[in-house]
Image (cartoon, rainbow, N blue to C red; front, side, top):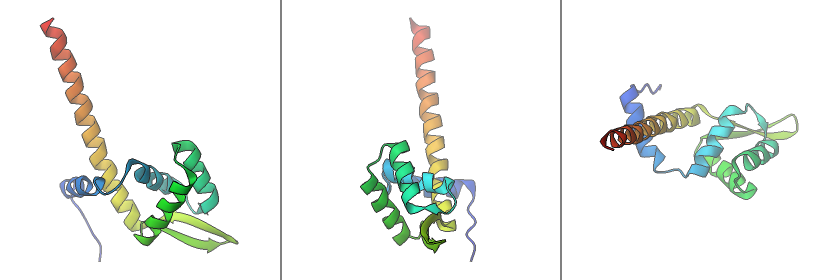
Length: 121
């Protein structure tokens, strides 16, 4: 069964999902999506250093994401490796698309306010 969402449905899904994840969790999931089957240790350390998230929080986030089927961990070449699942990509894309629109509109509103305020002076 394939799930095809319209852009509007994806936006609505993102709006719902964004409430269920912390900023740190979203940063972890997004970072994992950029790495393909790297070791859990190297991925965790990189995320912790780049995103300034405690290593224990990153490891816990990965464990939770594995339970939610957002990431998979497999034994490969003697190492445990981590990657995002198809389901994880769908969820992440919906959240990021929603966040981009919210950020864009928030920024636009602030700019319009600033320009309209400057005209009054």
